[in-house]
Length: 259
Image 1 (cartoon, rainbow, N blue to C red):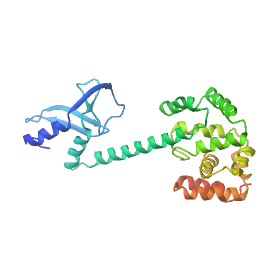
Image 2: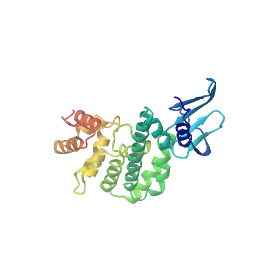
Image 3: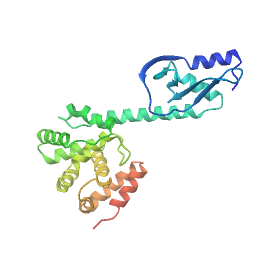
Image 4: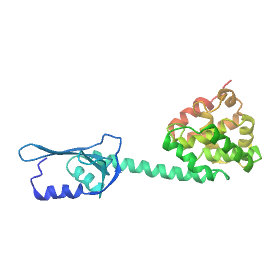
């Protein structure tokens, strides 16, 4: 692209203005690659745009934050490259959805476990599952706060039904209530779902738990114990969810009695 026009080159310089060098280097190789040449064709610099927010140049030890990444994305869009702006907006929307899901998940955490929330959320940053020690501590606190097993299971179902609600591809921390539910006797789970206090939010947790992959040590046998009215109720919930993956799983597990 010819930037000999002073006005055009000034717009690009403004769009590429750097705010700071925060001492961070993204592991991703980058998206748009800018190669700058002089009039004789000699390459002056190579600068790579990352996530619509940072620039990488070989002369900098770390990536630089753009003063306004949208300016550069808009400049690219105006020059026939709408992809980076579209990707940026899609990423922004996913981030907003993730923030809202995490907020809902935190709001549903059972009483007495709030002090462990940061440790559980940290699992999604490290990518590791909950340790036996953490699960034991959660179990002890739940037993203390909810001595009645039905109330305890209702609290866990409400928690597991929050957040993204997905049966796969969800943040690691959302799997913790599922781990705890896997240890609940099926009789207690059935008693909780038959309780008058069980609502749509509890059904959401039950569906997510019962139809997810390897959710229980004896999952096939446990699902077979579901009474037909409950089976139909949970299947109807999955169909209303709008989640095609969840609906497909529920149809395989719940549509007909499994012996």
